[in-house]
Length: 190
Image (cartoon, rainbow, N blue to C red):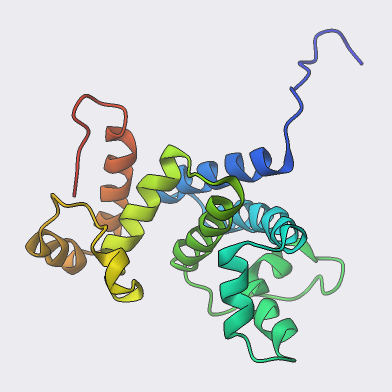
């Protein structure tokens, strides 16, 4: 090895997934290339899902196992991984094209990956916490009542309704501002 090449410190698979999720969140809010973001978040999920299977007691993984019809698991995960498989398997069908993929798929992919990460690590990184709040505010209908109550207390229903009425670009801008404001004195809130 050349002496001028920097040697990276070793990391665990869980730490690698954390870095990938944090990177995907930051770039998602920055409106970077959605396919690149999807590739990164899919790589993180590719680490987390086998870790969850091996761990055996991961709530997010069990939740998916409980809702998928027996015998349909491969079909379900094939659909979930459709875009990432397209991006990584050029050898199987080099002339294929991917249709009907919306940039918003990354919202869900990041949300699922951070749920797996939280169960495995027992905590969320700061960017993950920001994303979780942002996602919950934009998708309150997905949450059961006890988790809806955990939405930021300073966020009124009128503020949530105003945010929901805004275009997607402003949703992402709000996420970016939350992420940037996380380290500022007093932070910011929705």
